[in-house]
Length: 394
Image (cartoon, rainbow, N blue to C red):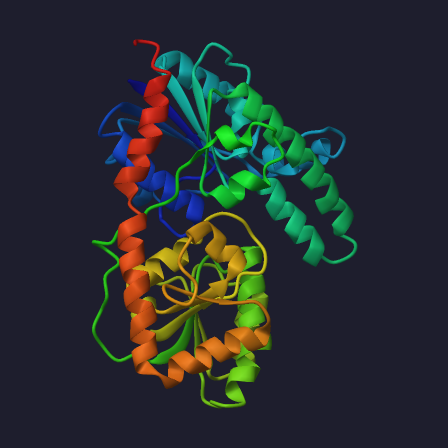
């Protein structure tokens, strides 16, 4: 089959969740089909990243989105019903390039990741199409509205309404719909949402493996540190949970590791010598190996937290929120520990720090859980089965 895959980002390097999911699925689908990978990009891409992607697909096209075009489109979107997230990525010059690529390649099927990309193919009524929602963007904007400054709340309110309508419209226009978790599926407002396929992420357990050595930090948080749910989570950890922990263990240290830390995150390290903010690291496994406990008190956001899967694969005990674990599905108290209020998190952390046997129990159970439940090959097989169901050659 000739498969055309359209992404809103270049899926390499793997510093963001949508990039990781796209990269791992594209790599596996390209073993079964002739894949044309078409990526939108709002920034220059290093040649070595482009060359890497050429090794995992048959055809590659990167379409640059100029910042002035994005700004102009966002202004015009104010006077339309198009969600800003869609307007940001949809441009006439890019549409022409996508159309030309489709004419040249003549695909049997189109796979879009996120509703951000669907505007490019929504009118291709005769072409079989699959939409990987990944997560429910409208729910994410709804939660961001709750925590946004008062002057931005009307913007997030409008964006939430637009995204709900747009997500429902795309549901009707695509042949297959995929989402990352049952929790995110249930956040959609479409009456047929239960008919969606839930295809979770995997984790590369051959890469993320336990590493021997002495931990240099007590707590770890990883992720894209310019992403609002991650910023919110790490602020909650350092400003609300850590003071409670330090009432009992004054020397408790925190390692915050991940690309592009925001000024608010960097300020945490300037204010506290026991908080380390690394920024981008060449091998995130070194950060996992450097800490005793993985703490991710996610308060907002949607989707499946890859950071939790990676930490469990590296045999770390994990403390997180019910919100984050709903998508993961680990057994609370056995495979993962769940907090709600700051004191809950502090109690879990203190117990784990004081009891090496308890740390090992949670870590071992979480490690076994990830190996049982999350596998990229199984995810790709499930997605491939959906795509082949609409194969026009059958």
